[in-house]
Length: 142
Image 1 (cartoon, rainbow, N blue to C red):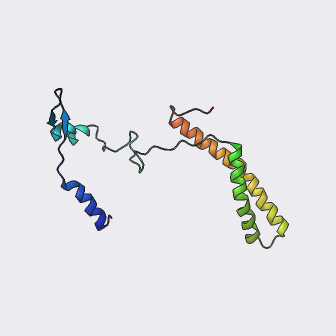
Image 2: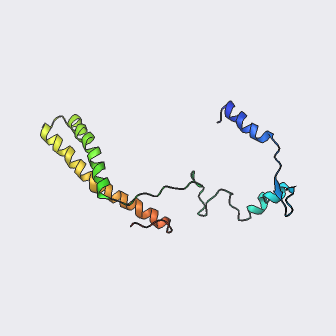
Image 3: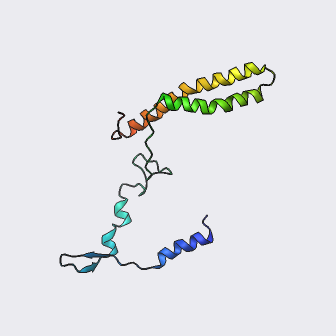
């Protein structure tokens, strides 16, 4: 629910009467009727769908938003992520598995960090291919 300040700001934009004008061939400003600017809502919704609805019938949250193109998968990025997550994994295994020897806990943490590298590469590839399938006009990798 909007705050009182937000409601006041919104109401302020509705208080003013705007005149829409166009210039004709002679350069004179001619006022345009509101009916000419936007068609009636009944005419625009003949298909039975809401004005903001997608073609698939889903009216999601970000329906008008442009998604950022995911970068193509690369092993360098996957290794960097593995190194970034490797440290916290080692610390987590040292703290959680106290019954095992310290060397075993560190080895398990390193193993998880190493397994994380191909996993992120595969996930990046999946996301990238899915984006390319949905947007066939998107830029192809070099």
